Length: 128
Image (cartoon, rainbow, N blue to C red; front, side, top):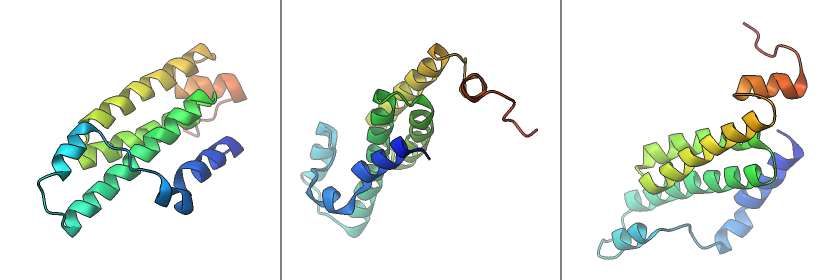
């Protein structure tokens, strides 16, 4: 990972900061939390949602910083995590971001990840 990716990881995954950052919540989450008693399983499920949402947030920051390849990889992880957590709103946002990162790579000289890597770094990076 490049220095940009490391900086984004530090910003979004810093434990000291994560204790003070308000959880990323939607109105649906607030409705789910009111009226239910909190169990350990609910807490673990919410923690997994937070990981998926922070991954999408870091992908958004990578895309805004001009690193569509890092953003694409993070969006793919976020998509998998959002599917596992049954988080449709953030899944839709992750899918949209994934499409935007592919579009950004196409604008920079390639129609997809492989074309982008070849245009940016030259040579055939596929070992097969």
